[in-house]
Length: 304
Image 1: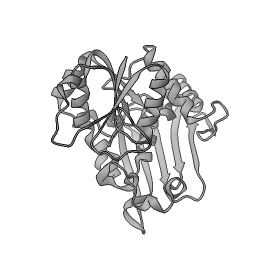
Image 2: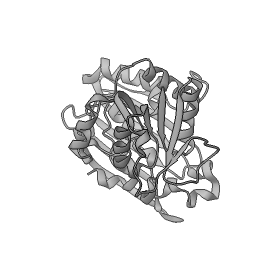
Image 3: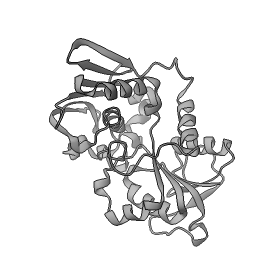
Image 4: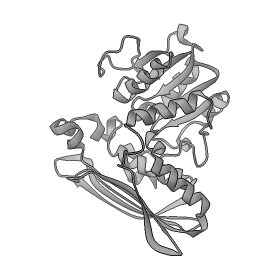
């Protein structure tokens, strides 16, 4: 089995390492010769280059883990590079399928799509999903809370890192994750939710970082209320989901930073690939489990 890994960053390498450990031959595709770590098998494409013919219909699997700004092009490359009945796995998709040319989607009818988002595999997320499914009519409100600080990850380099730059695929990617979780645990799509109001603050050190965002939403049919609170300047990391039922005002609180049930994030990536490679449930191109994430890399207001 051969896999095309589109991207050469740390996430792309994580997928590559797992696949190679399972005996899958991986080749990376990049538009820059700079990358993290050491990658031996590399196809370099400039923005004007085409995929070499020897790689057409060559791969059984394509992992799209490059810049979100290139997703449309990366889909085209994945289609050309893979065979019928192959797998297309997309890391944290940041585009709504509505933004893709319908002709592109039609090409992929013989491919299977999966969303690579390891937080979905957190055991507490699965518990929340089951509770909502079993008692959907009783759910009154859902709160998703994630406060952290990129300085904890990158230090001073966070001010120049692409992660905080909306023009290069960064800026509040974490908010996409919380939106994804809301859609995932409720089995809804972004079109089902109406944004009542939102509040944004910018980092005084960089106009490209939204320090914090608070969003109030309501489901158009069930009238379930949702509240999302995100912060990139919190001194303490905290991440949880809170549920309140109509018949019980005591909230159910699920900590998403609790790692007692699994050793590391790497294990959740391993779980994802085990599920995909054994032919697990396909995450379809449309619908509640589909790739319906708004383009948050260009500020949350573009979801409206």
